[in-house]
Amino acid sequence: MPLPTADRPGLAYNANGLRSLALPDAVRLLADSGYDGIELSLNRQHVDPWSFADADADELRAVLEETGVVACSLATGDPLLLSERPFEPALVDPDPSARERRLDLLRRAVRIGVRIGVPIVVFSTGRLPDGADREQALRVLDASVAELLGVLARELRAAGAAPGSTVLGVEPEPGFLLETNGQVAELIERTGSEALRLSQDLGHTVVVEEDALESLRRHLPVTRHLQVEDIAGRVHAHLVPGEGDIDFDAVGRILHEEEFTGWISVELYDHDHVHERSVPDSRRFLVDHLPSLGGLDRAGARR
Image (cartoon, rainbow, N blue to C red):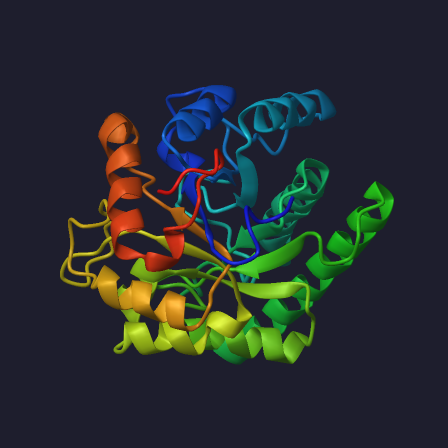
């Protein structure tokens, strides 16, 4: 699915912050609230990796066409999909049988993402267990990513979709094997594939990196998707944009100067209970502080 325009980012909202709504209702809410897109989330409420079928994909495509909202990403980071231990087993688990469970989940996610037509399927590495060898974990990660890239290529061919119409994105996460933008950029370089991109999370960058704004700017060339939320005191707790310490005016200048035209997605996974406020407040704040979002809306009106 294309970007809303060729010269400005699209603004989306992650459905993991709308879990109390059925997925079609979440799409309609975002359309009514002025969002361009929805970031889908792999979870049992919306896109269940074990039961999502062609009929579900058809229903989703119908409501997207009805509203004009774009499914801009499929995020696979639900912490409890595979066990009661958050994010376990990891993609870099030393136990091959445990690791296979995560790989199976991600293979399913790639198939679903291609079936829906999202431009990017996003995943993270998971944590490296205490005492595990980092270099060995990186070798395991490289092999797993190569396998997923192969799955992606086969699924695109089977769907008759062009190479690159869906890519894989790796999201750095605090405390995970890959937790900085630079570490993901190194993975992309090792892989050498245009089908592997960086999915930045602004809040994660602020928590982990000493110069978050410089990291944001430096890694935009390999960034396909940018999740945003606010952060206070460099504590990893997602806040509504404008309620923390992030200098969004500076972020807006960087995105404008670097001509970033990827997707910007609000990620407030623990705000479902206040989504009636967080959905409109996030959009209002970001449109005011990110100049590149100030284009025309879907109806052609000035924002």
